[in-house]
Amino acid sequence: MNQNTPFPSLPEPDTEGLWVSELNGIWAEEAKAMAEGMGEEAFRRLARTWDVLSEDVKLWLIEWGTRYHTFHAAGLVADVLRSDNVKLVLVALRCLGQKQDRRELFSDTAERPRTSQRTGCQSCGQ
Image 1: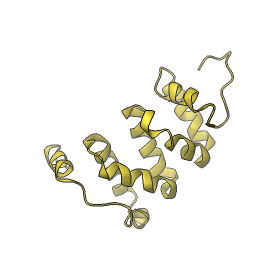
Image 2: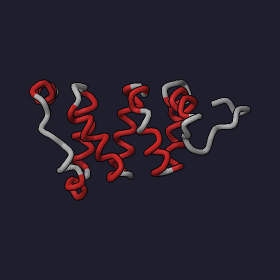
Image 3: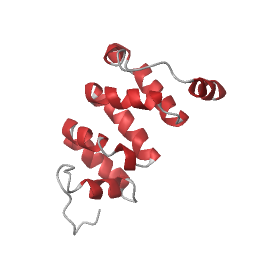
């Protein structure tokens, strides 16, 4: 995120690559702060780039989404809970646990974790 280079105000289809590059790069914290400042629409657009985000950025996106954009994060969290990535699953479960008053938004989309996920949770003492 060079000070001489203008940064797009919202992730757009033609600028998503720039956002992903910054989020996965050395200016990740600055890009995250900018995205969070842009709110719900930025979250929704960045969530569409899920497949090309690093694990650290995915963790941040889950945390940001469940904290401030629960309705739009529901599908993303449900997909994470169905995945085999134990680290992402644990973060999603922790975030859901912190939002007990909003848990009903996820009840229709979340499924029981797979055996490998339960085993991963047990091995972490969770």
